[in-house]
Image (cartoon, rainbow, N blue to C red; front, side, top):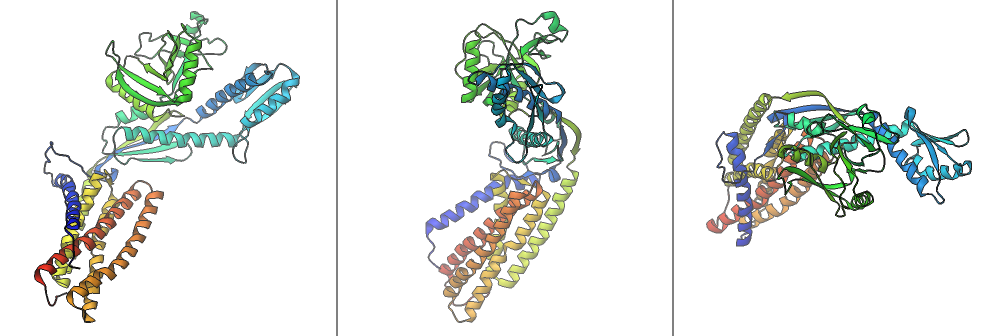
Length: 532
């Protein structure tokens, strides 16, 4: 018991001081005392229920999923028919009525075409994604099943939820709550954000980036009237582009989608010093982009974002590096937001804000005040009880309890975690349970003294034997908190985080630190008896 190496004491004090210093910015902010700006200032973030913030309800346009599936199926069908050996020639392709139909030129190729399409129409589960039927001997009709469409919508909403989460994290917010509601809605709650306009703009941007070849044979008069040649699409130029008010005809199939991006950064044009966005494709996207630009040198291609043409530059030479640059009269802020949107991925469906409200911090301030009152009363009661009951050992337990409170705040600040109203409950609960370990230790020391053990032996046995029960009890708490964190959402996770941190700091302060203090006192005083 008396042997306590210097290195271990130094280690314990270092950990305690780091936690104590890290808690100071949060403590001073609660007391409205300014913290020097030149010093690091890790602080505990407050959740929506404490600091207020923005609540936004987004609704997805599910019909876009069906349209996108139809377009993807058409492109896959054309690719499979072209890649067949020998090639299967098709024509009269139609997507009317939400179905894909096409004519096989030779009746002898119908069965071969059906076998090539089987992998495309069968779902991964027990249900079928598409129905296939042959009409008039040579026409194949592919109809989406309701089960396949429902599954696609569900996957699109899961993907959209993840994209929203990435975009909000890029904004530097703290612990947003992002959950699906129903079949096609997403709830977004961002604490501390009183002006949601920037958030709404970012979430409302689909960020669907496309590179498509310009149809140079399209008649300008037809394009101006919105008449698209067969196999083409017409897109307007962006409002801030030099060609604003005009439109452009592009090839509907054969381009590159932005889902092949792996990075996007806001940079500056070296010649004009204008803000631009530099993008980088993955290996497959880079290969496809190199092939597109190599086969179409001296031809224009359109850069389309969310249905608007940003620019239509000429391909002067093959672009082989897998990277490209997007320009479009950006400001630094708009280019940075576009880069964030592209990095986080395109939304598979458009999201529309159908409900918006700002939660004021008044309720949170009242909750913090009451939480602090409860914490103060509880802590004071525990301190008095421990001192009266255990004397000197109660003083050590009280010192460990105070240190424990500061360490919890410090670790939460260093980990950049968020404190919610349930988190305050977890905080108060942790304080109340923090001295349990010291109660077990002190009662075990009493028992060993009653058995006739000497002071040092009684204290050493008390710490050793009580520690086993302490570790077992706290392991179960950590397991429960881990399950809450894994399966809970929002405030439940906040409660779990505080509980885990509180358990770890309680063990450290109540067992390790008090043992160090008791050992130091025993070496100095060499008492023949103890009052405990």
